[in-house]
Image 1: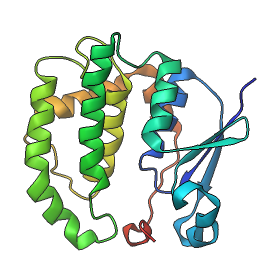
Image 2 (image 1 turned 120 degrees about the vertical axis):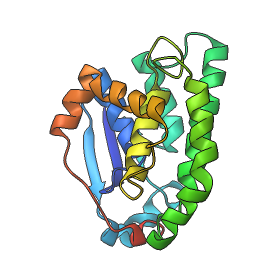
Image 3 (image 1 turned 135 degrees about the vertical axis):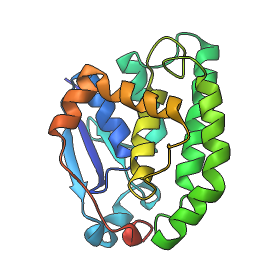
Amino acid sequence: MTTYKLTYFTFRGKAELIRYLFAYMNTEYEDCKIDMKDWSEHKSSYPFGKLPVLEIDGVVHYQSLAIGRYLARKAGLTGKTELDDLHLDAILDTIDDFVSQLPWYMEEKMKEYVDKNSPAILSGLEKELGENNWFAGDYVTWADFFWDVCSDSVILYAPDLLKDYPKLMALKEKVKEVPAIAEWIKKRPQERTEISLLQK
C-alpha cells in the first residue's frame, strides 16, 4: 500500500490543492505542518528550500503543481483529451503566475499588486470560463480546485477580489459543493500565519 506524507507550512497556501485531491480520492496521508517561526531550522532539509513537498513511500517530491498533476491523474481530474489538458495547464499556469508574484511578505503591498494586476487576470479567466460550469466545460478538474484554493488565499487579504466576476465566484461555490470537498472543508483545521514570515 502506497504511503503519503504531506509537509507544508501552517499557512495552507498551495498545499491545500493537494489536500483537496486527497479528500476527493478519499486517500489517507500523514499531515505534517511546519510553523513558519520554525522554518529556518528546517529549510535546508527540503529540495530548493521550499514547501510543500509530498513523500511517496519515503521519496520526497516537490513543486506543488507537479504533485497536483500526479494526484489529479490518479483521481481522474485531468482533461479528457490532450488538448483539454493543454487548455487546463494554461489556466493553471496563469493562476499560478498571479499568486506566485503576490508580495505575501509585504502586506502593505498586497492591495497595490491586486489592484494593478488582478483585472487583466480575472477578466481573462472569466472569459475562459464563459457560460461553462467548469474550466474544462462540462466536467470538474483539478484546475477548478486550484482556482478555489488560490483565490481563497488572496481573498483573505483582498476581500473584494471577485465582486466584479460573478462567474468566477460561482465556480468557487461549485467546487465547494463537490461532496468530498464540502466534507473536507467542514473538518479541516483553521490555519493562518504571519505573511511577513512567508518568504524567509
